[in-house]
Length: 333
Length: 264
Ligand SMILES: Cc1cc2nc3c(=O)[nH]c(=O)nc-3n(C[C@H](O)[C@H](O)[C@H](O)COP(=O)(O)OP(=O)(O)OC[C@H]3O[C@@H](n4cnc5c(N)ncnc54)[C@H](O)[C@@H]3O)c2cc1C
Ligand SMILES: Nc1ncnc2c1ncn2[C@@H]1O[C@H](COP(=O)(O)O)[C@@H](O)[C@H]1O
View 1: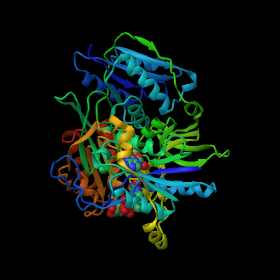
View 2: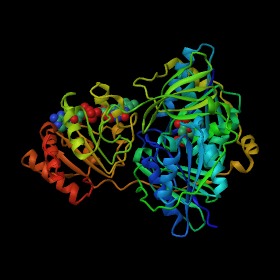
View 3: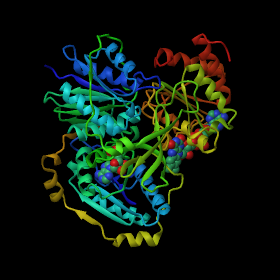
View 4: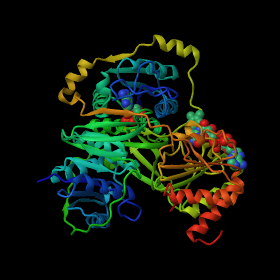
């Protein structure tokens, strides 16, 4: 039997699979190839929706640890379940989404299951020695490295948006129940006591968005920052900001992109009135296409941009919003 | 509380990156190693906790070749009480799993009430080591942590964790491992007399022979650097020449649709 690839589910707010898990599933299907297969593992309460979604994406089996105590499982609990699923399915390789959960789980699972591990992966291939080669950005996107992993067992966490999400390939749901043994007292006692959703409830979250429109001090005032938000809404984009903006309290810290904020790597990043300090660049430089709008032609942001407009953001951005809405067939704001 | 902070020596931020002669890794020749990024935050957090819970001690721990000593002295100058250099060859330090096993062996179960680390290191950004150490020690771990405080009972922690779905709040009993995402605008800096004192401070050392004997086959890397590359410099922005804002907007939207193909 060719060993299947194992995908660990991360669940979205509705209990289904998170976008990052669908990306991991896409990678698992590619790794498995035409003759291979992949299996999923789901932990928590009310797991039916996630298990069915795995089957719809083509899982040959889904391992399920349904336990109301683990509705918000710690990485320690997920590691126990994933190790058990790997043992039962005889998987050699595990793929995880590039989320906080995926990155926190990777090291634990690799240690528990005696596997090699790598995170933030943007390209993956198999080598003639049976091992894996994983490419990943390092030094805040200033370089890339390729890692050679022993193929016997490996845990691979992806970089968000680096791979396409799996499309439907429905198979009947084959469900295997896991019973979790050996979970330590600390894991059971750790409790999630709350969840504050991002304040910008409108539009996609910074982490998941394929387009990010970000504004800086060049907008001049918190009121003008709304121009950035209108452009973002027209593009279906998430809104980001430089630290000058969050420090000044124009927008909350959750908007911040950069070294001490979020790292994003969308398909399109639009930087408006942002100078391009290194601490900002490390958070966005691996975006696929970068647009900069800045009144100063010598601003460092233009060094990393693909398209540049030198001009007054207060005039350019409203024009851009109008044009985007016209082309997309949206009513004018 | 017995607080341990895990610190990795990373190349100074402004270092020019060069590829080594064998093409596999960063060229370390002439590179200055520093305590940086989220590890600096871990030290600041450890010292804040110590100040809020008198009687606590903070021990800085670093695994790798001799460059560890430099950053351990920096941690002592900032106010850490003690430091341990867990010696290891560069090749071992290149596999996060070997790093984690060595660190966990040096810390030993029961030795720490809290282990603080960066959520990811400033160079390789793997974010693997803290969770792997926790698994080895059999204690809970959380990365991407903000706003950490000791619980009222002194035996637990309360903190926030940044996730894609939003900011979660957690309570966790000690001992546990925390990977910090928090950054302070003004973390403390070392005072000159403390820097001078730190030069002479004793640093405990765990020899690699000892760690390798304890780990056996587990001391061998299964994850090695294969290639290191600097991206070709971006061609430079294509600057849009325009007469009016509407003209600029029209040209940009056309380029995003037809050339870059990233228009929604
Ligand atoms: C330890 C540390 C961590 C940091 N972390 C981060 C981080 O995570 N994220 C981050 O962003 N920063 C971070 N910073 C701050 C960073 O160094 C910069 O100070 C910050 O990014 C500057 O924000 P800005 O580009 O909006 O403002 P400025 O640097 O003031 O730039 C404003 C830009 O707007 C342009 N402009 C002005 N008027 C107009 C106009 N009418 N139309 C168009 N353009 C205009 C100007 O030419 C200028 O380029 C950090 C700094 C430190 C020391
Ligand atoms: N060689 C090391 N010695 C001590 N701590 C380390 C070492 N490598 C990583 N760490 C810790 O683990 C965190 C994450 O590192 P990494 O997994 O390499 O991204 C760092 O911020 C450090 O706190």
